[in-house]
Length: 125
Image (cartoon, rainbow, N blue to C red):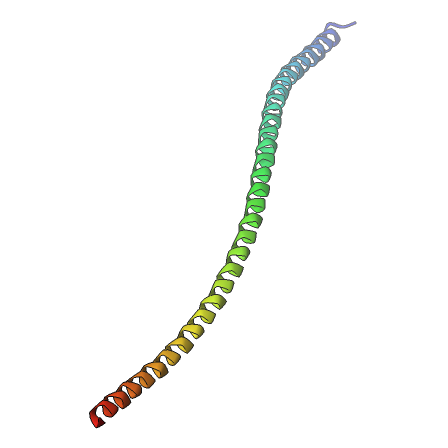
């Protein structure tokens, strides 16, 4: 073999070796990036688990608030019914009072008339 051919073979082998070294370097870099990505993915999974836990807690709070609101609505309805009942009773009492006042007014007028008649009779004696 000629020395020139041997030189070409050596150069090709050197290039192949350099390419292999570059590929090894790239693979090392990719492994590092993959490790970083795995770490970030683990962090994201932890964050997602925490968010899921917080969401469950928030849902429980919302359900409790809804239940309390339903209780409050029922109490408010009961109070409204009581107020309407009291309003009706108060109206009835006012009507009764007005009727009693009219009767009392009539009785007062009669009493005054009777006193006037008695005074007239006394004077006539």
